[in-house]
Amino acid sequence: MLRIQVHLRRHQFLKELDPEIHADCELIQWSNGSKYCSSDVESLITFRESPQCGLEVRVRGPKNFEKECFFFLEEILSVVDQVNRIYIGMFTCKLILFTTGHA
Image (cartoon, rainbow, N blue to C red):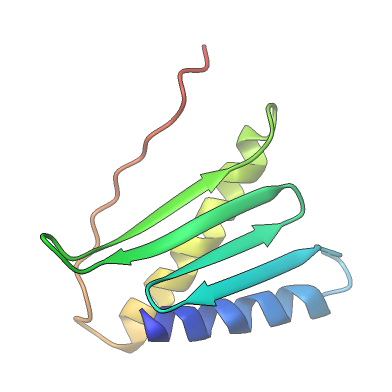
């Protein structure tokens, strides 16, 4: 989890420097997780050690922000994928998507 947190910190720093994005970012980290907010969208990234090890990423935002939530999730998963490519075999990825019941 520490390596992912380092890369999230780097991602936030680069996002804040980019003049085209102008994102209001906030990143709070603790031993087994991170809360990463960008504008009105926020994510919670947690690492579970038992009974099954796993990384859980949850993204949420206001109504009508489905597209922004999806792209923010994609950004975070690309950071996780980057870490997995650098440290080959660090973990196996399994993606499960849940959504609220919007029709």
